[in-house]
Image (cartoon, rainbow, N blue to C red; front, side, top):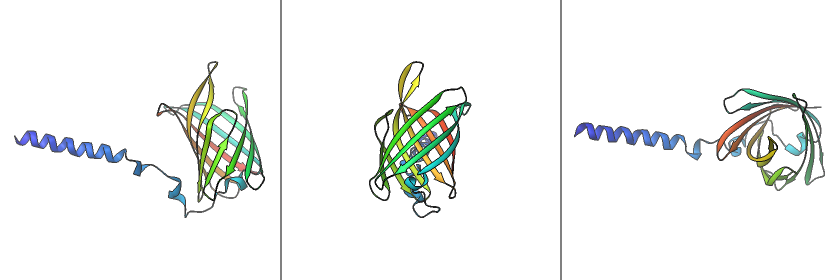
Length: 182
């Protein structure tokens, strides 16, 4: 009888640990950065010319592609038009134009030709989180990939971007980018 009760107690403890470790409370939120510096105001940082370099890693962490990119943004007081040109190490060139609207001090909404629906942006302190679904070309087809994209301002010139890419809730790749403002 004691062994049965002991096993039930152990299972209960393990269940509680698993449930609390997967809880939303452990997930990083943009608000976690609200009182930190330096403040990243995305429409200011991405206005003008910004250079970027990045690596794409598969789900096990292996670097599968690298790129350099040129970004050029124009802010009109309400909307940021951001032109991106990616030069991949295999010779592929990709371009994208974002239209990012500032809703209020902390919230943004974005769109681009290869983005499904609207992107949602959240800005607090040095962090900017961008959530969106991107149509990614894979073997002649377009696959919908969900991006959980975080940019962290380091100083007036440098920001670091970390994006997790998922399909059906499972991580398929990660992207790490360093931005340097001209």
